[in-house]
Image (cartoon, rainbow, N blue to C red; front, side, top):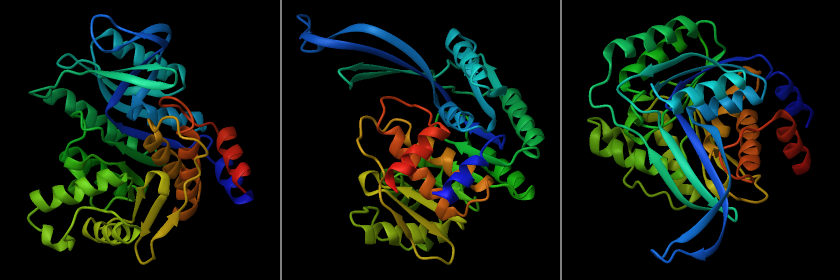
Amino acid sequence: MSTYKTIISRFKNKRIMVVGDVILDRYIQGSVSRISPEAPVPVVLEESFSYQPGGAANVAHNLAALGAKVTQVGKTGFDFEGQLLKRDLKRKGIDISGIFSDRKMATITKTRVIAQHQQVVRIDREKPVIRPDAALDKKVASFIEERLKKTDAVIVSDYGKGLITPKMVEAVRDRALAYKIPITVDPKVEHFACYRNVTCITPNLKEAENAIRNIKIREADAQELGLSSDRLYSMKDVERAGDRLLKYLNLESLLITLGERGMCLFEKGKVPYGIDTRAQEVYDVTGAGDAVISVFTLALTAGANKQKAAELANYAAGVVVGKMGAVAVSPEELSGAIKGAL
């Protein structure tokens, strides 16, 4: 407990940059007592609604809640939702000077309707950008290059909404390596092969399976991966796949989250390190991956080794899945979860 407590106490004021797709999450909460006469669907009587940062913005929210000084890099539309998201992030103490408004896009918004603690439906609002604004992308890249040298770590939170491209990943990674700061990635399958040489990537089981399939289809040197199957049924399958992905992408580490089976950490020159889940009850898995990469990265900047960082991230995920929606974990909640388990 004392080791974890020391690491958590060092979170405060660590400078973290989060680069990724920012999303506005809207929650409509209510109750259901009847079925609609118009269609066989439940009628939800709205009782309350709220907005929360989502996507990469939820990663920033987690970091800020744990005491870090966070700079958010992303894009929103010129719309009410974008202003609402930026205002909320600023209120949470997050530096939003790296969020740029793009007239060609709408701020990505996910509306979740929840009744009796169950998600009834999710409504997504986003406008795909056919031709990205090259001048705006250049401004984003310049901002990252200027600020990266003043940070303790960078997180790439890739939700596949257009901000993260192979070119951007390469530029951010090369700068981070040059400044000798950790770079961690919450990956999107389509870009998996672009994440070579980073400090850590944190896919869940399904993402790891899809990534293997994607690499085998799209990459010219896929035979070097050395995997005949992309289905990871057993822990033996997971360990073999993790080891091969670690070597193929030349990663310092790889952290695969396995739901109710916990996590498995892979590091160069070490045997796989399995971690049992710490969740007491599971209400909603939304935001669990954001909590994992936030705490793992922050722990590295606080001097933790990767095993301790992964253990702390596992405790954080256990807290998040016990709540409804994408929520941030406080230092007190994280310490309480550890104390309760020991």
